[in-house]
Length: 269
Image 1: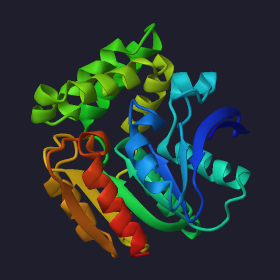
Image 2: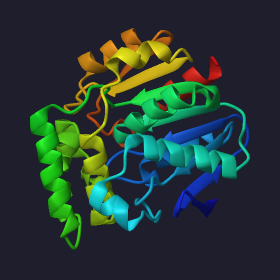
Image 3: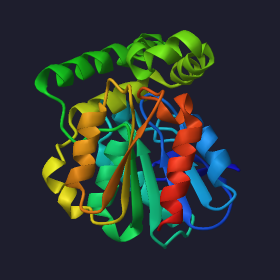
Image 4: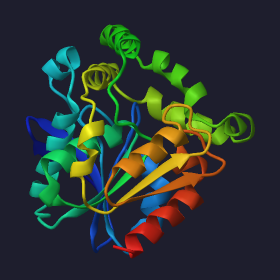
């Protein structure tokens, strides 16, 4: 079911499916809730699956200030808490965050540990941007603030997908491109500024004691398997799984393997 609610001065759109233990899926940048479609279909038979569109994305609104000053990863996390409160979901949730959604998930886990039953980190990072990456994000944000569309952001596609998928699964590339193109340039700007300013949480991973699953595409060039294996090792109660035949966009490149990984993890909770 697609719904909209008013929280924290914005209109947040979200989907809910199924019944049971709440599982919240946080999309990446610059995407929306549709990137989780294969997982929603697989999980909704046994769980209450909640898939928000982060502020500014997928029909969710953002404030004028967000577009000029950025949205922090903590702000996105606060929006998720407000959504759960609005839905009267007080029990701890399973939270899955992909890429930028993972940055949001770290903030959720560190600031609201009592609301977290388990964590799934997909193709994400814990380090802050080095200066050159931060500068690149700020330049993209500036470009997006005056852009009419998000065409410039589609340049990311070449690093988001495994080489084999770019060659042999054009439908996946096309789906991701369409998702990027339907987003607001100001939402892209806001997220770029927020990611540029995000904190390094490496030293705080030991505080996240809930069960965790760390998932990474074998060909991920953005958050490489070796880096993500290190994240799993730093978390007190985590396992690591490498997804074959996938780059950064694991949920769409090899959905069956991701679905099986999620299902096995959830059964063990």
